Length: 522
Ligand code: NG6
Ligand code: CA
Image (cartoon, rainbow, N blue to C red; front, side, top):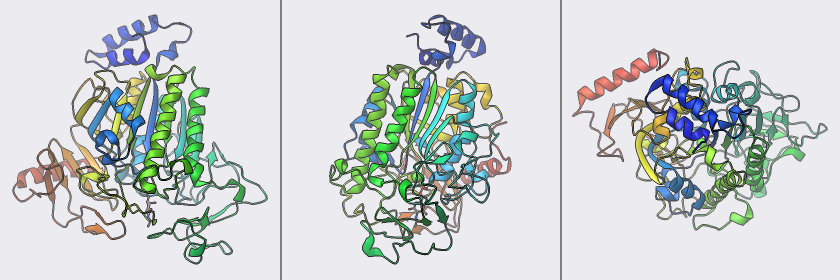
């Protein structure tokens, strides 16, 4: 194989810079057209799903059919011990794009719909590094990292700073979440389809008069909230936050997967001749779960199952586009999720009643928001790395390492130097090594940190609630330290902190050092 991906794979072997140079020359010499040297660089597609649990995917034991995601697994490498950095969306995405653990930065918790951009323009980012290496970089789908200057964006004018100022060439965004206003798409710096005569107003404080809310007008709702989510009604669904105006621009939830999948495929088509990085960030399977009619009742699990089927369709469209464009062989596809699964996350969508035998988080304790494993241990599949198809890796992997690993794949490992926490784990990512990260930190919703090192998982003491009453998820907080042996007890049922005081001391000290040093890497 003369593809760039094959060359990069060879470069990833131990053997240093000299070997890398020889192989780079070798790779260049087998290019069809020497005039296009960058063509050999492997493309990267990162499919970043929302709230999809470890156990929600067929190849991980899920009961909903996910043939396209399973195809990725059977053609690639499936990880069992891969982690988002956080049990919620905003901090996971912050870490993913900056290579810095979000708990180092105040203000990176779940962002409101009118938050300012959380990533400082000018700092090294995953898309920026790839852009510098000659990649076309695009983000399509959920953003949830804020937009605009402090005070929030001007929805009716030029929206910035945003993704275009932190390394993306193109963006088509759900600005925050499907359940937060404003319920409009933002393409590059503009709200799509905005009528200037009907300007948008957004408030996360006082209600906006004249706009019906779920609290006052439940009769107008097609899906009622179970907790929160009782502010402005859009498309028969009440949201978090108040909004008026922008009527022509408001999205239709049922069409969202179609709209963003089309935009993602358009990006692939438009950039087929160049190396590209596509960050395809799905709304599925976050709330509100409102599938297109063609997926309604496709599963026995109600809307939560149906949007898993819809997500699988989106993945199939991306894979089909790569096949059609002849790009599959030279494209690394990574499929994963931003945090673990939640069942009732705020709407009465039958997710609890119709769950049946499905275990959204597989054998793991807790869920989205939690310090227990189900908070951050997520599905993670890589295709295009070589090795045997259908293999499984039990290596401990953190998404914070995707930045340095993708930089290495793009041939610019030095560009990631100085990034605080991202290690080059390309060998593990491509299945050439089974090496685990030396240790990794997990962040729960209330800020509780856990440290995983080898078989041990240490959860620091925290006074927060043990269970979230709304979602019924065990958050993992305890005033006492907790220590679990993840090899013998992946479900975190036996706290060994009393028996293993020495291990607890060591891990607490390492966590303290990681915190106080401000960065993990030199
Ligand atoms: C919570 C929301 C939840 C979800 C979450 C963010 C309530 C009661 N709950 O505050 O529904 O939107 O924020 O999810 O409002 S995340 O995946 O984007 O982090
Ligand atoms: Ca999420």
